[in-house]
Length: 213
Ligand SMILES: Nc1ncnc2c1ncn2[C@@H]1O[C@H](COP(=O)(O)OP(=O)(O)OP(=O)(O)O)[C@@H](O)[C@H]1O
Ligand SMILES: Nc1ccn([C@@H]2O[C@H](COP(=O)(O)O)[C@@H](O)[C@H]2O)c(=O)n1
Image (cartoon, rainbow, N blue to C red; front, side, top):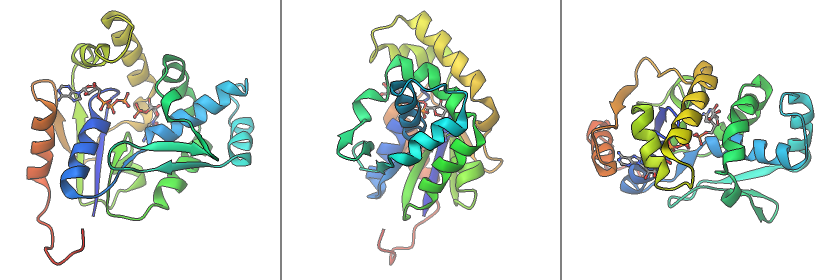
């Protein structure tokens, strides 16, 4: 089974996906890390991020590998682990430009569709575009203020600056961020992390006890 968890920036997608995946005993897949890795590599190479053809040429010359570990996904290029650099503010501010290119989206989608189910996939368009056949879809929201306050606990910037950056990213990502019509929308604002995970686990279709996962 594939479970999709989409939502706005910093709504809790990766934390919730990780918790749900652990409870189910399956991996989770963080699609945003591939867009982040493409952005980081483009920035490091000094490329114009609005030039999709140049960026894709660069990406295809040194393939990336998404490792969907249950405890936290990692992205590798050869033996370099890119993961620690993927949540820098510079990547945050460039990633939406990269993710807007249809050819970059096709490059990411191909890598995601090549993964073997079962897994929990999180991002923006997992339920609408990449895995529309998934039987269980969720969409996380919370106010920009709540999300910024949560993120401020893990970043040096102040809450106002984080909130402005999140709102900007939401606006730039709007084209690919609509909830699937069959997704359950969860406002995570009043819920704890475990509370959100519990809502999702309770809503999942009953699993076949004879299935291996
Ligand atoms: N329901 C919740 N209650 C309290 N804190 C939460 C909740 N959900 C997530 N958090 C915290 O909010 C922060 C952002 O969560 P997370 O990184 O999982 O979001 P995300 O949607 O994957 O972010 P991004 O879109 O930037 O990749 C983390 O510090 C996480 O622990
Ligand atoms: N399915 C997705 C996932 C991500 N993006 C883009 O990547 C950025 C980073 O994603 P996070 O999940 O780590 O926030 C995000 O802001 C989008 O630009 C996407 O387009 N589709």
